Amino acid sequence: MEKHFRRDSIDKVELIIPLKEQYLTILRLTLSELFDKMGLKVCDIAGYKVALTDACRNLIYFAHRHLCAQQLRLVVLLAPDRITISCSTTGKRFCRERVTAHPILEQQDIYRDIDLLVISSLVDHYRVSLRQAEDRYSAVVELVKFLPPS
Image 1 (cartoon, one colour):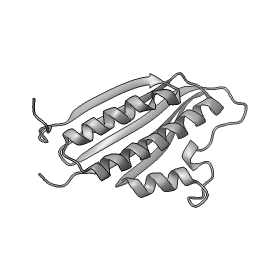
Image 2 (spheres, one colour):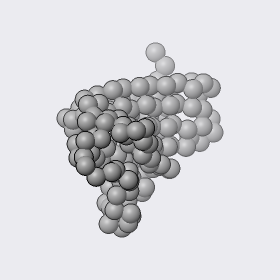
Image 3 (tube, one colour):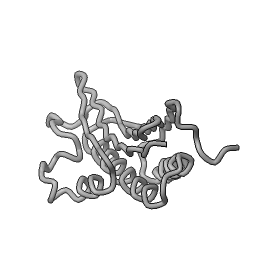
């Protein structure tokens, strides 16, 4: 078996775990192995594992406060020029107040939100979004690692 993946195609890895912190280790180990197979450095692997953990914890906390959600979904796209990691949770809103902001953006102040500050310092690019369809919400955190040309 080859140590490294070929970087001439796009591969998709998808995992769905229960919406509980004790299962985050599975996501961290999967991400670590994929990054290693892509030939990335240990520092990149460690940084993205921390960023992934912070993003997922934030989604779990958000879901427990606002949504009837049961699962956390991780999708990793391995492309020739980048690795895109998308974490999301979806559920029906149960709280009385309307959810207006993504969990990471609730405070709107990067210096007061340590999770966002940590994530932004460890990844090449990130994006957060909150999508609504009637009373169902999907909260998404996307992390991107740009790869050097092979």
